[in-house]
Length: 160
Image 1 (cartoon, helix red, strand yellow):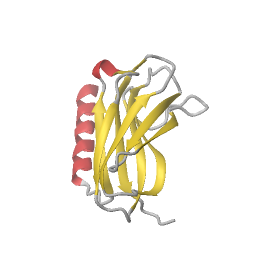
Image 2: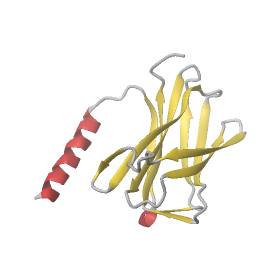
Image 3: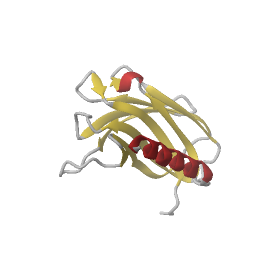
Image 4: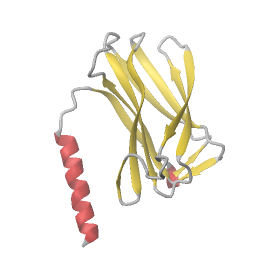
């Protein structure tokens, strides 16, 4: 019975998500990890075609992990390749748990979904194709219980 209720809730959430119109969305894609393991050599890349350099955007890191993930945070390298061939690399830390030990994000069962704002109100300097590549930067060769990661870019709703 609980399994049927969970499936019904999941289907309802998916339908509502698809039905809602997201006019601010510029790009969103999530990629899965085989066997829920993010190895250091397993890079995830996202290519984004940008035509508007006047619109400011917010960048979100999407991460789905199990509650049995071994750490309260995750360090990530992000390489940005610009349309003109130049590149930049950032190191970021995302907190997945509060100081009290409660998992951040939303969840269903033992899965946690995080959508973490990491760059805000930025404008793309050039039109063209950008490539964003993520690499886990923890001290562990393999991070277990990490299901998916993704990138979401949306138009900034508040001018600064």
